Amino acid sequence: MQLSHHKWDVQVGDLSSLAPFPLLMSRPSWQVLARLAERLTVETLAVERALFARPDLYSQIALPRPLHRLFAQHAATAAAARVMRFDFHYTPDGWRISEVNSDVPGGFTEATNFARLVATLVPGTSPPGDPTHALVESLANIAGDRGVVALMNAPGHMEDHQVVAHLAAALRRRGLQAHLISPHHLRWKDGHAQVETAWCAGQVDAIVRFYQAEWLARLPRRHWSPLFVGGQTPVANPGIAALTESKRLPLVWDALGTAVPTWRQLLPETRPIEAVPWRSDGGWLIKSAYSNTGDTVSIREAMSKTAWARRVWSARLRPSQWVAQRRFTISPIAHLGGVLRPCIGVYTVDGKCAGAYARLARGPVVDFSACDAALLICDEA
Amino acid sequence: MKREDIHRAWAPETEPWARWVKPVVFAAIDEDAQPTVSPETAKGLRQSVLESLAAVPGQPYRQDRSLRDVALVIDLPGAAGVLAGLDFVSDGFRPIPLYNAVPDAFAVVDLTPIMAALVNGAARVADMSVGALPAFLLDANRMVESATPGNFDNRSICRATDFPSAETLWQAGIRRAVLIHTGATRPAADLEPVLCDWQAKGITLWFKRADLDEAAVPRTLRRRFWLVRAAHAFQHALLNRRADDTYGMVVPSSSS
Image 1 (tube, helix red, strand yellow):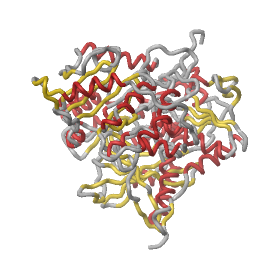
Image 2 (image 1 turned 45 degrees about the vertical axis):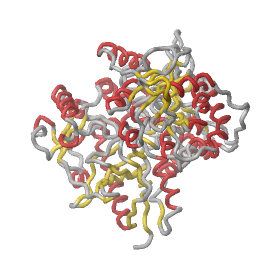
Image 3 (image 1 turned 30 degrees about the vertical axis):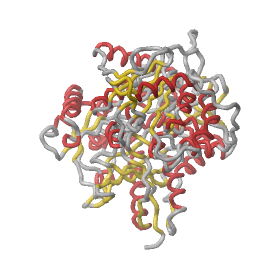
């Protein structure tokens, strides 16, 4: 995994980030998850389209301010592919989801290569899919079999760099040209993207944006606005995904009037933090509208007093940037005298289920310290 | 020598400390890399550190040859860290490379000498027995301040999560940690909080300046004045040269 499959963060402090055992799931159970993820994708895209036309709701989802006017005045840039990952948790009451990673989902090499390698050691099992293959094929359809794809990330983040390095290698194996770039390498001419670096130059046929929308929005607009609107070069994921990435999205469902029955069935109650007693009632957690790897998911009992006090201060200072969600109990699995809480991230690529990225949380929150596990599907009961 | 063999030599599965070896520079080594020269060593540095550690405090004529309670942190520029680490192999220290920057032909921090030194030193660490003490290797150039415009910014910082925790070190019997560094009295700003945590757990810190002909000495490390720490945090922010949480990008030319 480390040398050939771009898994460079295998050790975090004292913890290994790769579980030495697989998670097994029956095929019927997996098919349930796959169907739910596909239905959630349809509903999410419907919400996204409806919300794009409702600038009056942008503030309610805490959309970064630079995107407000942009979205209100231009057509959305086309998708080179559309990838989402829905985080499922098994509870005593059945499956629940905590959120969708709609903007820049990662975990491709773990979901693809780690699962494949572990499956070779467990007879009668197979990975639930190959999200890398699905994404690469989707990009090849758009960019052409010999097309040029630029993959954009923030290079200082090793966790992100390994994702785009993995995808670039897969694209090259497929016969496409792949260039790793930062936003400052992009030049735009009539909405068409060109790359200018010391090592490559020229027009690109598609862009993989592994760079969070809220981070891009802090950069000078000339570098990124065609990734969101008015661009002629298709992007995966297009910037419009920022709308459905917001954890405050459920707060505008009623105003939009779009049917989201699967979301309503699976997502715990979600409220503005001003509307619930989240500081005194341990049945609520809070999280910021835009966060990564669960880094702002806050549960009082799971944090130090100082960390909780800081989080309370941040949330009270800017309540419109946060949201409260009912906590649910994840059915744990026993391991070495402790418990681990599984999170099954189910990918869809262009609406079709494409695999899963499983993580095992050591605490109540699936965050950076969670370890990756290979989810394998048992072909026999 | 195959890349996998080089990595296995530095990070054997049987060696507990090898879990912390950072893989990214190994992943960038050629599939079939050949050693170019025999690893050089710096005998004076090793001798100075070992003699200082072996001397029994307050009893200059007695020596305690046991170094089983020692971890090394070697924070030297470029390949010098690898070479210094290799020099301690014969004394039972296993070099643990913690180089965590992305190699690139147009990079601000040139990792080529480090990668070459890792290739050259693989045969030496491959023969080590299990149970060695850790010698963590860092590149002192990881946060070099000057960056040439147009180059790929692969500068990096080290964090507490790049090392074993103080508890793990303590449970392994580590009671002394020696920082071998150069150019300054204090540790690098990103490394200092890590060492302070170790010290808070009871591990005694020793310091050895590689650029000075002096003995390694134990010293209590006090956190910098909060204003100085704030300045360093600000410096990290400047390393980003942008308002988001990221760092690392092509250094813009002055004309762009």
